[in-house]
Length: 253
Image 1 (cartoon, rainbow, N blue to C red):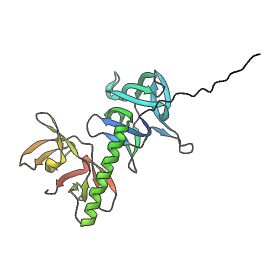
Image 2 (image 1 turned 90 degrees about the horizontal axis):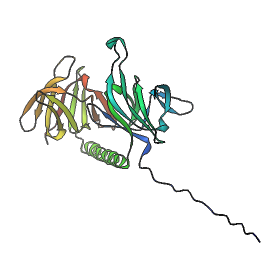
Image 3 (image 1 turned 90 degrees about the vertical axis):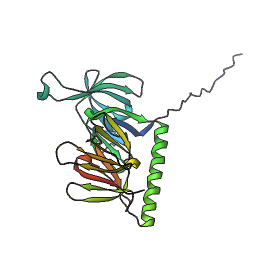
Image 4 (image 1 turned 120 degrees about the vertical axis):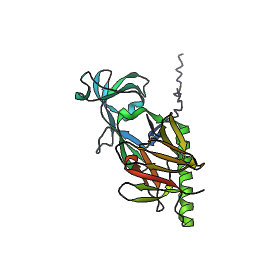
């Protein structure tokens, strides 16, 4: 007599601490950008997103869902210099674990909060999926920002500072940018906003100016942040290009 025995096999599932709808982009200069989505090309009908470039010397339209991370070596120009497009080169790691050389001359678009923005890949050090720690930190930052904004509205106050634009606009609210990168004559300084009294930017193409500290000190240099983010009293966040800013003032504490 033969007895047939069947076994139920349950696949082992290992948790991956990464989030498909959350991306962490680290620029060469400036603050880390946490985005909800990234793409170079987007299929608006099908909802798919892809990054354009060359992977392992082949032109690709790589689906974002297949990408785990991209580490960029930095921009590199061809032998004709300015006559050729500059390209960002590095290593792309796929979710399958495969690694390969990646080259692109295309910008990456992304969603931060509710706004669509764009950054050149030449300005990036890396792009990777968010870890659980990143998501938790971003959630904590959002909660802190909302509490600060709520206290401003409830008290009828003006927030913690104001951003004065070169066109004369004055934005008053909670300055969300918490660290300013200031290139002094000596070295690049990373200065927390709570230690800053004001930043004055001179007219011109570069961001040369003077940074005034609450301690009374002042440092000449260049603002390296690409943008300044401010939360307005009526609840909207805006990111203004640093090149359009004339002065940043922080209220007395």
